[in-house]
Length: 73
Image (cartoon, rainbow, N blue to C red; front, side, top):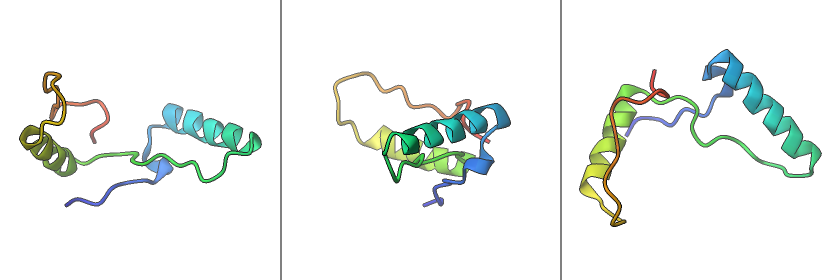
């Protein structure tokens, strides 16, 4: 399984600044330990998740997983 990327510095600059501002805001409100779960996703990781999603159906909604997503490198 590909490693999950959690480094905020991997985000595109405009989005990175908004995430950092959000993290400051929640800390000021007394909410600690808030961090994005995943920041950037390699094509290999997306393919792994896509494969898992295609084999596991936990809802009756239509499957909408894709290998073409804006958050990919």
